[in-house]
Image (cartoon, rainbow, N blue to C red):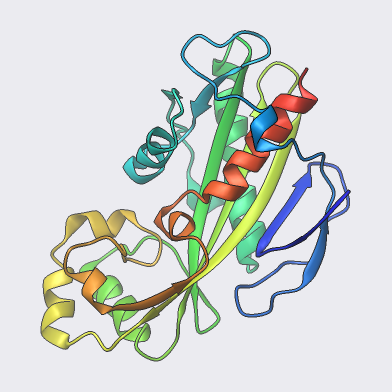
Length: 244
């Protein structure tokens, strides 16, 4: 057992659920998993041995793929063909975890060799509204206008699955983005940026125009971009250690 002060909520599937941590209400929690020190966990590269299982990311998100590449991982990409609208919950933690599990369920039958499968999902919560990908320019503009009055809380869940044993490890991370006032003409311009329609909440803190209106980010920027680094690498190390 390890005590951590964190906005992360990590557990092994089947263990007792922890209380959900928001970026605003931070508590001391107990993470019920076996942590492996970073220096004892070498990187996974190329054709991994049984000890170094190859990594598959089940996501079409260029942001998640780029994050893994930036962290030094070699990986393969598989796309999960699921109808995300069939998975619903009023709890953003439960919604993102359920979607990440649904993606893993869809991909596992297609994996025939030992591997670690990473699946993830993300939503934005603003003024108690769960915001997913905007489906129209008007929806995107409505999202952006709301960020002037309320912060955007990014809720990202990650599931790592051992494709051979089917054992899973999961976790949730939150990060909060505070925006300055975004002028209406800028909102109209942003509504023409097609990539924003592929992001939860309709914003990208690295967009050349939008980043000028980001006041601050409380938490991991990687979590807002789509794949929280500390959580993801912790889950990978834990899965590798418990897969020996």
